[in-house]
Image 1 (cartoon, rainbow, N blue to C red):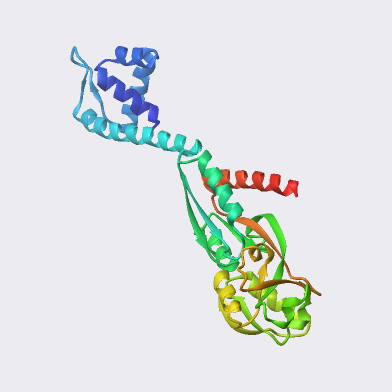
Image 2 (image 1 turned 90 degrees about the vertical axis):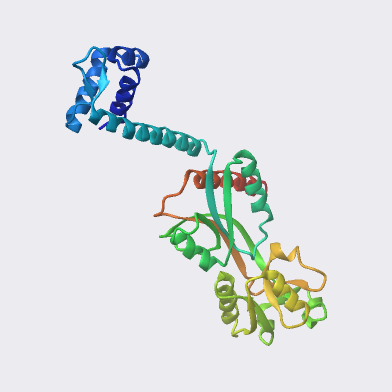
Length: 298
């Protein structure tokens, strides 16, 4: 059964006339008569009583009429919703953001996107890279910002930032006056790290192991501001991304780490095997174009 069959049936029922319905639909009377006949044969009932001077609905026709109205309304609603969706007048995007990078520029992009598409709403979730990858894989998030490397078999990725980690310590610390600190000099320090949900947790431990020591971890957190606060109270040292260090208070100091330096690369990921909404696809394209322009200026 085609939706056109029901729509033609509704017009005939509205005018009680094949000729008037055909005129209103800009088709020939034989065409609409054939469509109604096909519908009757498919349903196995007569929809109109043609024995009288005036065309009238049969009992079966009355029942079909009510259902046809509902179907037609639903179809028009569907068309409207799809038009809204394709025109990006509405939609919802779920984005996972790591709290350990300066998200100001990303929020600025979201703001610019919202100006262009005010009907689209956002859900922003803060978590570590491991949790974000898990949620993107389980379709709980559309896209996520994570630390590379990631699983290239599961995710598409768009790298957009790369920077070093810096040593964060109290200004009175003996190493605070140095312009550069070798990683092995931190062998005797107490470390405050991000928890295991964050890729940087493993990255820092691996780097320390590579120069011959296992870091003594006294505390873990999911919030860089809390890590900064603990460092300011001389509870230990930490390693934070360079972009975050620009927001630190005078109660701590940031020092460059060398031999080796510890780098991280951020990327936006999305699932290769999950449906991505029109809104999420448009946001990805908008963000990729905007970030590519910014990166080209560097």
